[in-house]
Length: 529
Image 1 (spheres, rainbow, N blue to C red):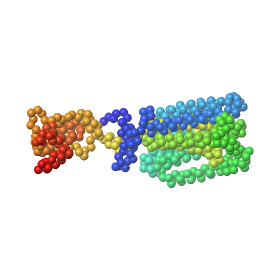
Image 2: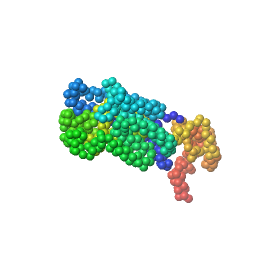
Image 3: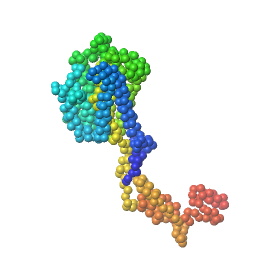
Image 4: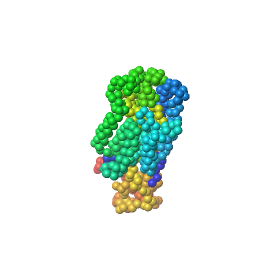
C-alpha cells in the first residue's frame, strides 16, 4: 500500500489513547521548513546559527584582543591580523570537516570504522611522548609539530571518546543493562586508555571534560544514578589527589582559593582578569576599546578571552555568550530526542554536553570558581585544534539531525500489517462487515467507485411492504453484493425499488418512510378513528 508524499508525516502523531500512547496531534498540524518537519529543522537551524554566530564572534574577539600584541611581535610579522587570519583558516578547515561528518552516517563512525578511529587516536596520543614529535609548552607536552603547524591530539581524542562511549552504552542496553566482566574490561580499554594518555601529558582539563561527558551519556542511556553518583565522587577524589601530587596543579588550587597571596606570581593572571571584568561594568567599554590587552592580561586571546568579553561587552555580553552556549546545548538535546536510535541520541547529547562542559570549565576558572585549566572556549578562543575539533563535534550533531524522523505510533504499526487484496471478500451469511477492520485505502477506493443503485427495472412489479421487509435479512441485492466485492462497507439498503421507498397513501399524499413521516401518519389515523 503506497502513501502519497508527506503522508508519513501527516499520518503519524495520532497515537491511540486507549493503549496509553502519548498523542502526537501536533505532527499532523505542524508546518514544514524546506520540506522537513519543523520539529526537526527548527532545532537544526538554531544549532547552526549558534555555531556560526559563536565562530563569528570569536573571530572578532580574537582580533580585538590580539591586535596590539601582534603589532609589537616579530614572530607575528608586526601584523595585527596575524591571529585573525590563522583562526579564520582553521575555522574554514573545521567547516569542511564538519560538513564531511554531516554527510557521513554516524553508524559508520561508531561501528564500522570506529576501531580504526580509536587506533589512530591512541597512536597520535603516544607520539606526544616521543622526543622527536612532542612539543613542551608551559609545563606540559600536549602538541605535535607538523612543519610550521602544531596540533593538539587531545582535542580530537574527545571526538573518539564520545563515539566509543556511544557504541559501548548502546551495547550495554542491548545486552540487558548488566555490567558483565567482559563489558567492563572492554570499557576499561576503549575509554580508559585514551583518558590515561591524556592525563599523563598532563591535561587534566580535557580528562575532566571527557569524564563528565561520559557520565552524562551513561545516565541518559539508563545507567543507575547511584552508579553515576559514585563515579562522580571517585572522579573528584582522584582529581584532587592528582592535583595535590605535583606543585604546578597544587599552586593552581591555592591560587583559586586566594589569588592575592601572590599577586605578582601565580595569582597575577587571575587578578588581572578580575580587573578586566570590573572595568567592563554592565555594558562594557566597547569592542576594541579594552585596556587589559595592552600587556596587562596574559593570553587575552586564548585562556582569558572571556575576561576580554567581560571588559569590552560588559556583564550583559558575558551572560549573552553563556546563554548562546546554553541555547546550543538545548538544541543538541532536542536533536538527540528525535534521533532514530540510541546511538544517535547518545552521540548528539554527548557532543553537545562536551562543548558546553568545556565552556563552563573555562568560564569557571576565569571568574575564580574553579582552578584554571588552560582549556579554551569552543568556537571563541584562539586555537586551531580547538576550533577544528569543536566544529567537527557540531558536524556529528548535525549528522544525527539529518537522519531524524518521527517516532512510529500504534496506528503506524497497524498500517504496516494492512494489505489490500484484489480477491473479493466473503460477505458472510448476513452480508455485513460490521466489527471487522477494513483498510482505509480500501474504503477510499470503494467511495471513488461508488455507483448509485436505481429502482426496479421497467415492467417489474414492486414488491409489497411485507415482502420487502422479509427479504432484507435473507437475500442480498445485486448492487450491494457488487459494492461489498469492491472492498467497501455494506451500504444501508432502503429497498430494491424506488417505488417502495416513496409511495402514496389513500388520500394521494406521498408517504415518506422515516421517523417523522410515519409517526405523523399514525397520529392522523388515530384521530380519524
